[in-house]
Length: 70
Image 1 (tube, one colour):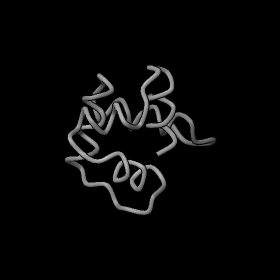
Image 2 (tube, rainbow, N blue to C red; image 1 turned 90 degrees about the vertical axis):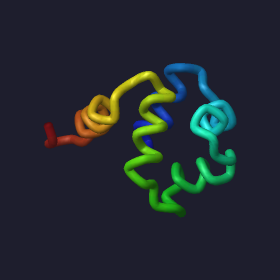
Image 3 (cartoon, one colour; image 1 turned 135 degrees about the vertical axis):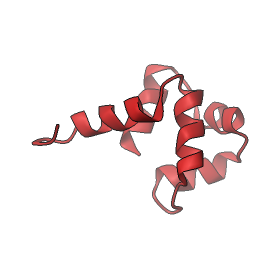
Image 4 (cartoon, rainbow, N blue to C red; image 1 turned 45 degrees about the vertical axis):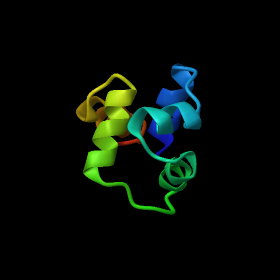
């Protein structure tokens, strides 16, 4: 979820803007980002698209941030 936050920051996108883009409440997005609610593949795909990237690219960037991985 850190990667999603990083991608949002790079785009100067707020949680409200991302939530609106994927059609969910901001509070629900916050629960996803804080890992209080498990995100479905469909939601992850919608988030990636709203960030103008593929789910694969989002996942790859997240993996690149993990020391010793990738």
